[in-house]
Image 1 (cartoon, rainbow, N blue to C red):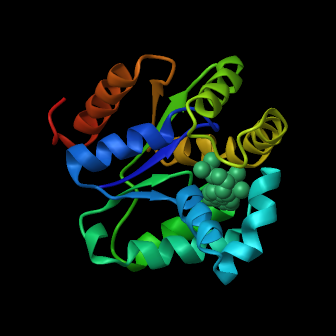
Image 2 (image 1 turned 90 degrees about the horizontal axis):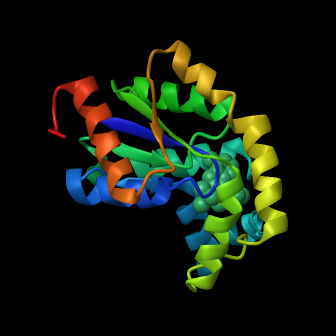
Amino acid sequence: MNLVLFGPPGAGKGTQAKILQEKRGLPQLSTGEMLRAAVAAGSPLGKQVEAVLARGELVSDEIVIRIIAERYDRPDCADGAVFDGFPRTIPQAQALDRMLDERKRQIDLVIELKVDETILLARVEARINSGQSRTDDNPESLEKRLVIYRRDTAPLLDFYRQQGKLETVDGMAPVEAVTKAISVAIFTRSGKGAA
Ligand code: AMP
């Protein structure tokens, strides 16, 4: 099964992707984590994207499409994956459809974590206070990431709604309740993986 977790920064995509990975053995494919790892390793890719990440802007479609395809072709994705933070633009979503099509696969379900944007700043602040913050966890960067989310990423909701693949869950609920709602959505779609 191939799942996309969708929502603005701070919606809980990473948290839920990790839970899905643990519970269902579907690898979490987080472009944000891959890019941060490249920056931390000081690789050529890392050097290329470091400033863009720090500013809270999107790296090029070409780069993220390439790293996702490389990652998806590893054997642990044989049964599918959870896409976290990808796709973020319409061209990325089209490229993902093409990539999966070439492999005789498809996106099965897109789960939108719907949240009230006013809590996102509080969540990012909590991440800072817990010592788990990232270089792009600051109010200015968050504001920019939200503007970009609304402009470039939110239109994907219609893209996937038109494909009949979109399910929305309440991302404001406690973590366990969100996990449960995601399980129900998966179950309803596939008849597998009991809630
Ligand atoms: P995230 O961890 O998903 O919030 O991503 C952190 C940062 O990585 C973003 O603010 C972007 O700079 C970059 N990034 C992650 N995923 C993508 C993507 N799909 N397209 C472009 N840039 C991305």
